[in-house]
Structures are given as structure tokens and as C-alpha cells.
Image 1: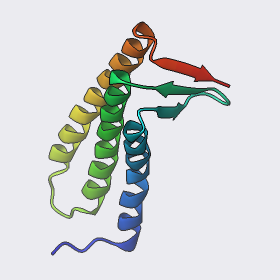
Image 2: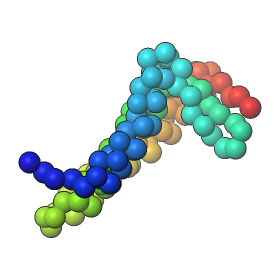
Image 3: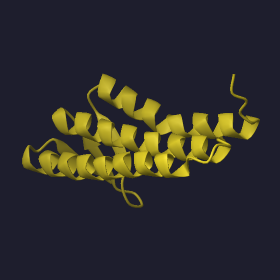
Image 4: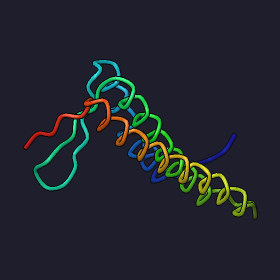
Length: 111
């Protein structure tokens, strides 16, 4: 059984917060994303699902970094490759979600 430090367990729980928040947004079909300062974006429908997958990719990158930090084996290159793949996939999903939301009018801006 792997022994993680208490700080690592807290770090993993803190990484899962955005995932749980966006999961609730998918459940109610209204994914709220804070943008800049007092502006927020609300996605619904298929763009919200794409954004949820982008957030899931970001959480995967964060958890991979935490696991890599506490793994004592010398396989940092593998963790780096996995994190890089999910990082690029997440960026692509984010851009596609935002553009498809603009095209389909599934984005509402609020101040």
C-alpha cells in the first residue's frame, strides 16, 4: 500500500474541487465559469460538456503532478508525457467549447 503524506492527500482533495463544481454544473445544465474580475460566463448544453471535459483534463494534470512529486521511482518522464498530453487536450477542448458556445449562443455573460 502506498503511503502518501497528509499534505498530498489535502492537495489531491483541493484539485478535485473544480471537478466537483463543474460536475454539479453539468447536472443542472448550467456550467458557471468565473472569467475576469466581475464578469462570469455560463455555458449550457454541448459546450458545457466540452468545458467539463477540459476541466477534467486540468484536474488530471494537477493530480499527475502531485503523484509525481511523491513517487520515489525515477519515472518523471512518463508523468511529464501524461501531463503534457492532458494539458494540450484540455486547451483544445477549452477553445472548442468556447467557440461552439459563441456559435450556438449557449453562452450568457453576466456582470
